[in-house]
Image (cartoon, rainbow, N blue to C red; front, top):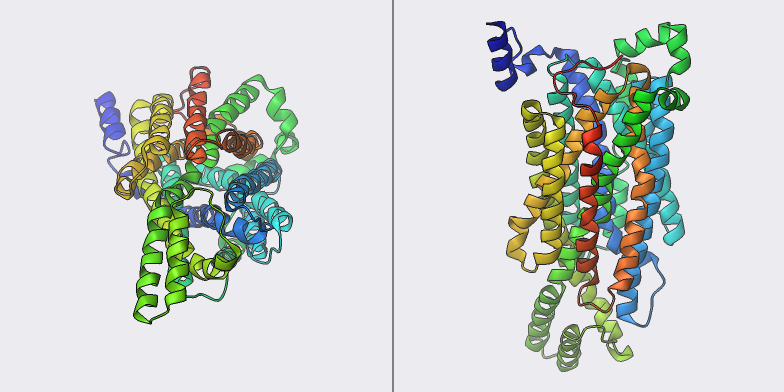
Length: 505
């Protein structure tokens, strides 16, 4: 009978005493989950604001060129460089603040990281060139990288054992709300730009990204350190090992988990940041010609109605140039081009927002799905399925996405597959390390991988140069880079299965 009850509990989300997992949570458990989820949600809001603002920011911050095709390529390439610098800051912040999360405490470190990424996100709005923008993004990355590890360590240690994996999957799934919020912000500002917004929308987006600093005040007042961490501090021997990378790598089992977990994380992180998060750029590329022709047609009709023959001639000439790839705009048409371009960019921003919404619509269900499936068949089989699905769906998007109707099924499918992996990281990494090294180990796996992941956008930039002769270099580079998702399959056999097991001590 006891075995039957355990089977029913495992397969119906019930505890052995017949309660659903969420009924195990008291008021403070919910408070911790909400605060940790908001911290990561706002963290993801910042990431997504950067992704959506990146093309417009590069166009404004880079020196202008006479050759439009060369300038467009420079925008793509320097956007990749900015992404790599951001990821390098993320990796360094993860290493430092992951260690401090074990030494100083989860709550205190979380507050510092939120303040850090909020402050420098706001300062990004004041950038005057590429290098100061990249510097602010690096500093923002320090805070972004530190927040995840301390957040999941906090939730893992506070929650009841049976509720822990569900809470961690929920925490990761709610990050999609931050991404969706960023898409709506970008959508609203794109509409405003189309109607003559006097300020650069991307600067406003970064100012909005400073708002999460208010959450730090809540953390400072009410959030307590987990009892497990407090107990570890009372042990003199353990205290010396808190947040120690020496201890992490001196012990064979923790060293093995850290190094293999690092490769596991690299697969998803590189895939997402070097490929997946360039999907809005791809959609802008797909829609550019149609959107431009629509805007020019509207302007031509308006000018004809007003009897502005000169304007009609200029607009028709510019409309023709849109059909000629890499065509240089004559000086006499440049003033009209500058007048029309904000309307085109505003509409393209909307398509970038729609793409982000579809990615995260799929991601929300994918992250819940990973949590549900991994509790039934185990973490490792679910990861294996996720890596293969992420590879196939991502390559499919970059190869086949050529019509706006595909946005509503092909892109959500990719988001489901790609981001489900990150629910796995949130659940799995805290289960690989003891209390004294949980934040350090989790951060090492998830964030040190970003040092390697930072190379991903640079490789993609080189691929864009290599495929410059192809019709759409971004598409070709994305298909090649999507192979990185299969990297995780190499290390899975050597990692432990943690389903149903207590946290190690």
